[in-house]
Structures are given as C-alpha cells and as structure tokens.
Length: 252
Image 1 (cartoon, rainbow, N blue to C red):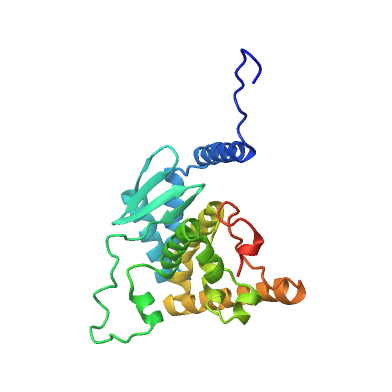
Image 2 (image 1 turned 90 degrees about the horizontal axis):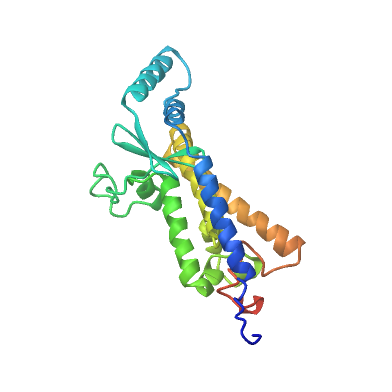
C-alpha cells in the first residue's frame, strides 16, 4: 500500500465467475418465464390419447376442462399453475408437474400383506412417479457432494478401478449423482418434464426397466471409453468439486 493511498483488493476470478453466472441465470429465468397460454398447451399435450374416436373425444374433453379450470400466477422468476388439485411449475420455458409432497408414503391401495414386496413394486405403488423419485434421489446425492465429497467420490463415481475393487453399486449410483448444481438442475427439469409422458405411455414397470437398462448401459459405455479404451481406470463421471478435494491423489 502506497502512503496515503488505500488499494481495494480485486475480486478473485472465482468470485467474478460466480457473480456473472448468477446474473446470467437470473436474466435467463426472467426471459424464459412461461405464459398462461403455454400452460394450457402443456396440459393439452398431456391429455392427448393415442387414437380412435373415444380417444379424440377424451382429449377434447380434457382440453376444454384445462382451458376453463386451469389457473396460474407469475412470481417474477417463475410461474405456478394448478388444475384439479395438481400443481405445475413454469420455469426456463417449460412446465413441470410438481410431486405431491404431502403424500410421501405409498398409496393405501397397496396390499397390506405384501411386506416382502420387491423394490419395483414399491416404486410403482408409491405416491411419487419413478421420475420424481429419481429427482429426489439426485437432490439428496447432490447435498452429499456438498457435505461428504470424499464419500461420494468412493461410492458415486463409476470407474473401472471402482468396479474392480468390488464397488459395483457405482454402476447405478453414478447415474443419480451430480456434483455441479447446473448439471443437476438441467437433468431434473428434463426428468420432470418427460417423466410423466413416458409413464403414461409405457406404464410404471416398463419405465423402470427402461431407466435401469439406460443406467447400466451408460455406465458400461463410460467404463469402456475411459477405463478400457482410454487407459484411465480411475476416471468416471462426475468429477469431484475442486473446492472439496485438493487433488486427484484423493481419489481411491
């Protein structure tokens, strides 16, 4: 510091990048807030039925019900809509059906004597759809990335080294693991947007089979590309945040 002159330290590159990202995110949210008419279009697309006269009549009735009964309100960065007890979040130019958080336990229609029911049966009788369950799991794992990064590197990064060491569960856990928040937000929006459509088209059991097959296939492709062909047995997605792990030597 020169005599009589006080220098203000410049913000670090990381702080500037964070501020620029925050400003860009706010501007994007403001510019892409969906309108009420887009909510009606979204509800009409959900009401579409495959074919046939009865299907067309059912779609027409659902569309009329949506145009009369749907409500929405703007909250600056997003819009909330509702129809027949269902609630929807409008954000980033799309609409997402919100889970019924008040009904966390499985439906009462589930048979009382099925205490040893399989995981698939439990997921299909839960009040949450499979895509919503995956979103909740992804959010939980992201919180663990923020609080227990070393544990997540060991148990949620799918690499050839991890599988060879017996941590075969990483073939599945890596698919719900997001170390970076933008990655988590992007995937959750798509899951909540496409999940109900796939659930209505395929049914719960086939959707679960598709999700499981896609998870294992993507992990196998990652192992082949990074571990076998690339000669990088300890690499696999997602990488740990540098603020949490000092160096690659922290990997198991």
